[in-house]
Image 1 (cartoon, one colour):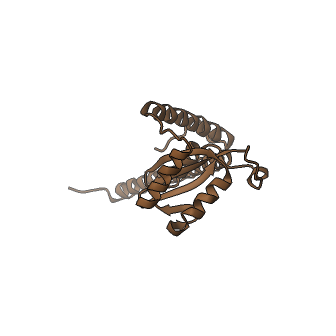
Image 2 (cartoon, rainbow, N blue to C red):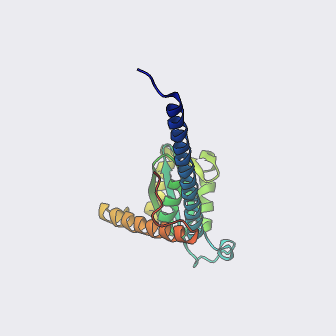
Image 3 (cartoon, rainbow, N blue to C red):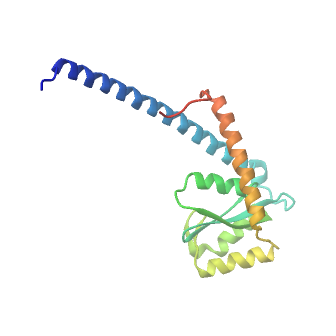
Length: 186
């Protein structure tokens, strides 16, 4: 059995060109996806941030939500106008499942007070060790603020709203940065 060596070499070159073309397409699509992800994370941060003019005020009428988000054995204590969108933004950048323990209407100063109360449990920034004492403190704080945990139906409805919002945002972002509508990774 004899093989035409020139024909095999030509076939290998064509295969190599085709493979390199596919690799380039995948790289381009990954870059486009990365641009979308960066833009969506930026927009979520913008939507959940507090305007500077309100951050320095002590006006108790300006309320935000003070939230408690759990990740494994840690809890993030922060504030946001939209705590569920904040949860989604944090989840995007975290490989571990995050859980909204709860939130209540409050101010930036409520959050600072909680940080001060729990300073001995601080891990880094707004993250604290989610030990038994911290769990008890959070539960008492939520109960004192008359927080009512969401029912499974409310959680399901919230998830649908957030997911629909995200899909709409992704579509809008794709158009804004010029990604073709039917782009796909082959």
